[in-house]
Amino acid sequence: MSQATYYTPPRVWTWDKANGGEFASINRPIAGPTHEKALPVGKHPFQLYSLATPNGVKVTVMLEELLALGYQDAEYDAWLIRIGEGDQFGSGFVAINPNSKIPALVDRSASEPIRVFESGSILLYLAERFGEFLPGSLAKRTETLNWLFWQMGSGPFLGGGFGHFYAYAPEKIEYAIDRYAMEAKRQLDVLDRRLAEVPYLAGEEYSIADIATWPWYGQLALGRLYDAGEFLQVQEYAHVQRWAQEIDARPAVQRGRMVNRTFGEPSMQLHERHDASDFATKTQDMFEAMR
Picture 1 (tube, one colour):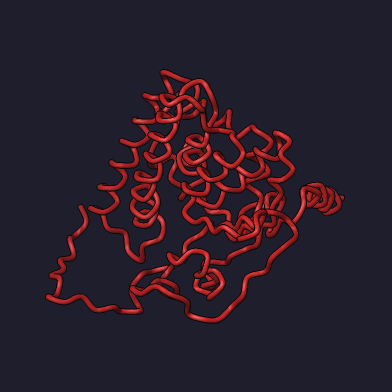
Picture 2: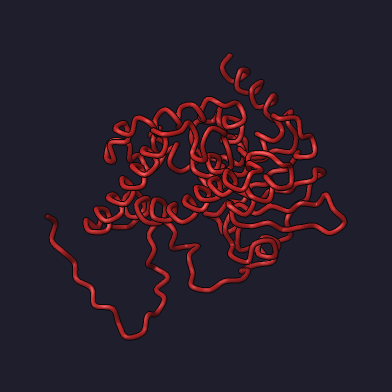
């Protein structure tokens, strides 16, 4: 066991800007904008301001799934918010989401724009708006929302807990990594037991519960988060693996992963999206680069 570093909290906490590791330059203990910056507005009903983090991918997958079903009024403009550079603290973004977190959505299809923030709220809004990916019966709807809110409550332990201390913290703290690794594996076991019973989290139908959960736990199972697949032995969760691979193969999911993506393989990056033809253009660019 590594030697412990003991810390005695002061009576009153004060902010040290140097603390925070990789995110020290953008983390702060107060809300509100840091600078004036208006947000761009495109031509489509939905304006999405986001980045392809797992929470951002939830919404782009949902919109692409709706478009795949033929809902042309689900067309959207996706604008890149570079959270590492503090774009989320611009006045225009804060007006949409006072919590300064991506994703944030504006529905401009009505006479008065409607702002929607928090990824779970956006998924629920879109599901109700189009009548898709959320069953109508009380029992099935409730089971879907059970798992949607399970993800919203559990995700911070995977991301802000395990992911932060395993991958981003300025020093490796054994206690913190052990604590959150245990919780991450417990959560994977919760999912694995559920998916041993049914094909999708809410039952027989693919729903917003899967769309919310897959970008976190599905991509973790596929080895895409925190380079932690071996550490957490994600291959042991056979039912999660089956579910993760099946959803990963959906064309709308593959498109959704690309939107507002600025990292990873260049062929999977589409920094902004303003029309469905952007995907065709991206594919053509990829083939041209390979010649």
